[in-house]
Image 1 (spheres, rainbow, N blue to C red):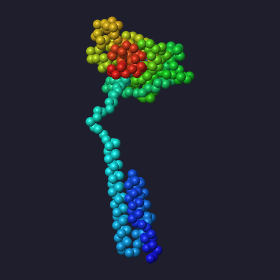
Image 2: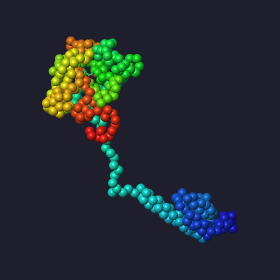
Image 3: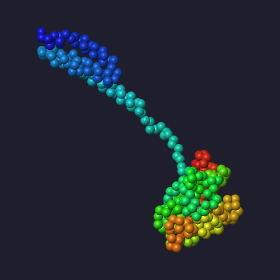
Image 4: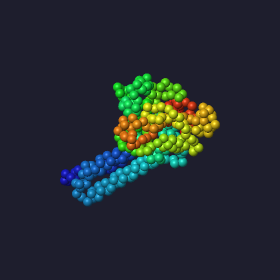
Length: 341
Ligand code: DAH
């Protein structure tokens, strides 16, 4: 007997097979199965070594048959484990397409956002540019350039929120006029919508933050008639095709002449009611012909171009149109209110 034959003979192959079968029954995962395969059939297993060393045909056939049998055991166990895993996956990831879906509540834009977009669309339709203004401004753009002298009442810290020295929270959207004119040559047709801040005490018609739309047109030969036609178009788009507008004299430092624009009451049609306080007219906001001083402040020549400007409150438009009785409702985030629009 050679050494090799001794190795082959030294192993009790029936016991080898029984041990394998026993261990195979315990296997519950593909990882365990692989370990078992390596142990009994791998390159370093007693069986593989014996097969390398075998010299006689009969033993070779016997060991090959044993190897085939063990391999078949491994294969069928792998098949069972894979089938079980697939079944588990299918069961766990089952999707019942007949179950009712999860309800996703649908939101809507805040009423003020809706009004803001509506006003933007109206002016985009007239060929205007919509520009963003800055909520934090300096005294030049908010006051001086708009022709407000050093003693003007809104410069008082009792009216205006000062952040630092000359830096303020804007009290109106009008400085956006100045910024646009400083940066562009005429003609200018622009609107700017956004938040403004005033030191007001909260009550049904006051809130320290609110929104305005500022409008400005500067070109050759602009007159009051252009202002009137533009605000009439706006009033009709917002409040209905039958509306009329009316102007009354007013004062703003940055316009000359200055006017308060009113729209005929959309509720009573002019007969007089609670909304228009029995007058038939509802105030829309301030407007006027741009003061020549303002044009000079931005480097425009008042002999060459003229313009009109206006500023309206967005909350006021929303309150009038939808009968909102209290300004504070815009800030309370009560869905019962917000969902109505
Ligand atoms: N800025 C004014 C305000 O807050 C509104 C206003 C009036 C704006 C006349 C204008 C204007 O552009 O020409 O009350």
